[in-house]
Image 1: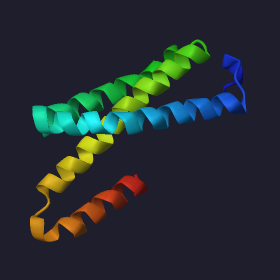
Image 2: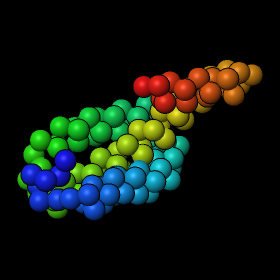
Image 3: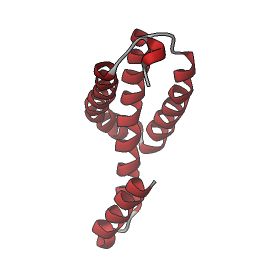
Length: 111
């Protein structure tokens, strides 16, 4: 997978780990921004950044640039998933919140 960039299985692990760590680090900030700036602008900005970074992989020329894209992509993924779950929880009727969040989680898994 990373052989054209000069990588091996260890580098694949780094790329996956960087994405995951960045997503975890982004979640508290995303939660703060959701409360401070509003649900819609944060969700739309996170989705735009995530989509733009999906195309950035075509520009990767080596492992350092791949790692940079993975970190940025992970940050936006953490923000997108946090924002989407928050919006889902906000729009479900309180009496059916558990059921609604369950369906939302199922849809994320099936997607």
